[in-house]
Image (cartoon, rainbow, N blue to C red; front, top):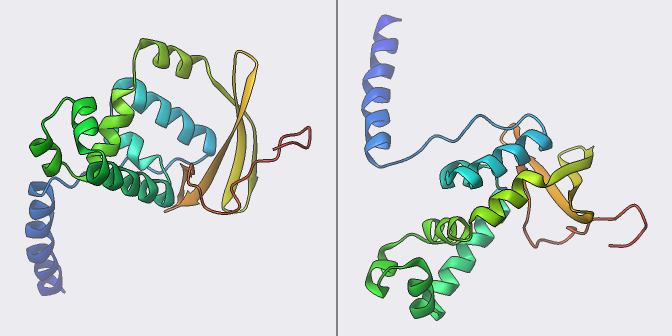
Amino acid sequence: MRFVTAFALAIALPLAALAEEAGEKKGPEPAKTPEECYALACKALCDGEGDTYWFCLSRETRKQLIAQAEEAKKNHAKELAAALKVTEEELAKIEPRDVALRQVLGAMNDEVRKMLKKQKLSAVKIDGEKATGTLEIDGDLSPIEFVKEDEGWRIDASDSEGHEHEHEDGGK
């Protein structure tokens, strides 16, 4: 038995070191509720913690953000480089995930942070692995969707089918 344990450690420790060297980051603990997920995402945005924000998004949302960033790098490199305050050569070396995060975090300013802090999530309804809620700020209501992935809740802002939120008044 000691041999098996020693062998497992001999393999696991170098792999863990390689993962750390490669810059892989461990995400936060999965959010136990949609409300916890939303609060974590808002805090991450306000604090400029892109990696934490990324882990608050569903796989499909992340996939779509990466595809949009790839398209922007390919078809709008000059404008994107200027917006990110990098050269086109530097932009070419930035991974699409990081381009997407830089765009989101670049939009953060005091006004947006203030709005995020005022915004309230309410009327959360869980239906199995999906949940919907309503964001309210200054009387304006917007739908938000969540999906349960990897034992935790994630914000689902993807454009996949079936992502229409019914408002209580029957409208969409």
